[in-house]
Image 1: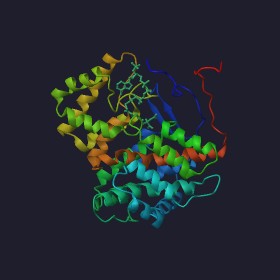
Image 2: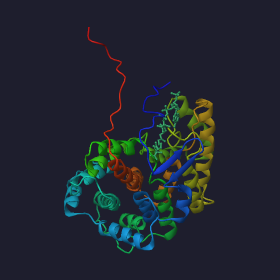
Image 3: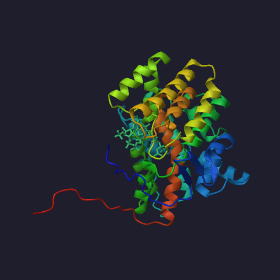
Image 4: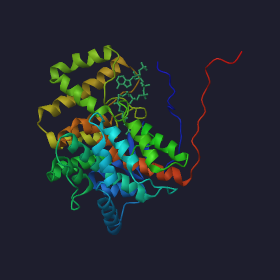
Length: 362
Ligand code: SDX
């Protein structure tokens, strides 16, 4: 058995932002079921809800939209940094570097404007750098397009099909916030020292990069590609589990039932790929993996987590595989910054204890 440290089950903050109910499989954002917000609200509306605590009026929404639009283009300093990085930099390292290159806000406490500025720029950083790496000219954001549609436009140069933009928006809304996951907790620890928002976001990006956290969607796609066809699924999954390897997209520290985000995203994928044999394969692999995980790991309650169907959405809307975790970060920037603002409000240094298991001086 693994050492059950890792703060499992430890309450490390009180928050107004979200409820992650692992037993009932519920995710609530500021009093609203996240699954309902996905169906009826835009990225800008839900971001406003998380930052301000209420859904926006028409005027407030226009103000949020305008601010995001005004801060979507990259400052010259950030462009120069992105152009100067060599090709080896993966996109998560690029995001960390771009956040560090932003005009440092010396204000304490950080403000919602700081949160909106970082949230506005992350998709542009990703698209700008991806263009440079692909050997083509970066595309400037279109002020007429929404936050999510702009991301697809800057990546492809084409105004996205509304159904595709809505599917990506559903993904970015449902992954926007998720309580004290590892990257959000890292951001709150840094904020608790009264450091600045950019430093807290760099800590969050560093944590998100890991395959046990944000790096899973890419591995899920690799798994489905390697399985290739339904008849190969069981032998492939058994081989992985017999070798003691983890199935990416399954298991969760909090959810001991199906992750409600996976449920929400699966229906979005189904609406886009009904009848597509790839979708049928993904459904078969999901059901089989859950059955085999119970066989190999009885009583661990290992079910589908958000990443399994997140990979399907991102693949379907055409996000390049190498950008999956960065895209997750672009949506989670809202949750990170909302927690940073909340932590800064009634701030106390986060400093847990540890049990010393080393030798004592003789
Ligand atoms: C995210 O916290 C959040 O909210 C995160 C997130 C968010 O929105 O921010 O939801 C996003 O991070 C989703 C998770 C993405 N990662 C993966 O899909 C990677 C695969 N999943 C695992 O590595 C794992 O399930 C974790 C890391 C997600 C959770 O692991 P825990 O809670 O630390 O559980 P554990 O490692 O102690 O595992 C308990 C047992 C172990 O077996 P035993 O040692 O008891 O025999 O379950 C096994 C593990 O080996 N196990 C798995 C497994 N996950 C756990 N076995 C096979 N496949 C898996 N996926």
